[in-house]
Length: 429
Image 1: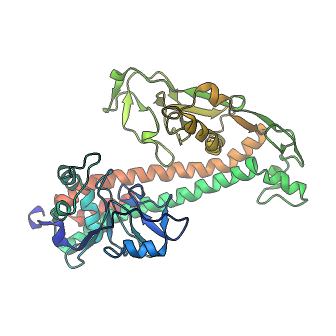
Image 2: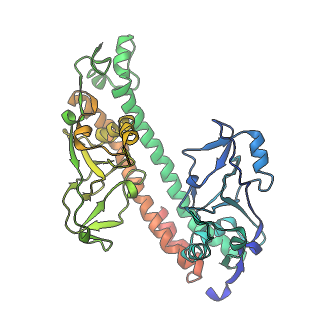
Image 3: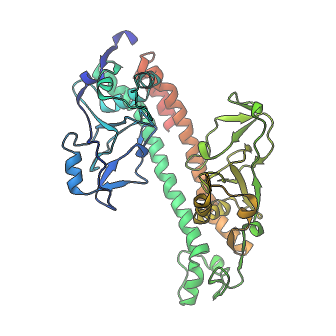
């Protein structure tokens, strides 16, 4: 198979390679999306925090490169070499230090090129040929145009892209499903414990939305004054320490760290945090402070307040705290910590060098404490949603491992797309 492949500079495989004007666009609250470095990670376009410009600046920035579906967008500066594909029906333009690649459809499949650029071989070429900027690496256009890309015939390119794309499509579907599930659990938390929706419904003489009679009976019919404002009658205005067990991390000796899987997974800060669960990278053979499965992990050093959930027993360093409600309610804990983000952000802003929060300040954060039976009712509804998230996330990680295993073998010609397709179909089922 490898003998049928050939190498060509990127410029020969593309109809157009263009960057954008170096000027900073006019930022607006809405309008046309501007693609920036932070929007591209791991081959995927992330528009969870979009940036916008107006029509005039969109036209100005599109004179040299008007993006369309299936174009690739590449970052020229740190993090350099990140790449994504422009999806259908997205009206957008390039931000600073971004490059558009428009593959020639007669020579190169867009998705095949997307995977090629993500391969270790091409990423190595990008890093070796990085520019000589004084503060950040800069991939210059002539070097990018000369980037060697190994490729087979177009039909095999499309077949390879189909195999890897099927895995990525399933991962993306799982990601969207998880985002929906998390939004449902957070909306329920907001209704019950922030807006006090069931109580207000009773005050208005109407049935609480989507609550069965048994659950609705748990909520009081009145609000009362408290140091935290109006809260349901019988609930308590208290602090985190009154409702939660808190374990502050402690960093073990440096010589106990390893990447060989010896000991427990070790999380020093939020570096390895993912959508819901952290990713194993560093291990510790002599852990000092640990989190249990289901504990909420909170970043207590810059940035303060980012959260994840432990999916196994793990070692936590001084940048992380482990939290669990005293009743053991894992879902309630997770969404409670998410709701405290504005309070955590205050410590991020007050840091003299970088943000941090100590145990005493963490425990003193103000918190509305509901009765345990209402927490149990929430856990009964939100727990299954979080369990679905756990299942889908586990499946996605398995699929990502398969994709990462297949990618170098497919892009080197060691295996054919037809042979790889059978194993990926089994994993996607």
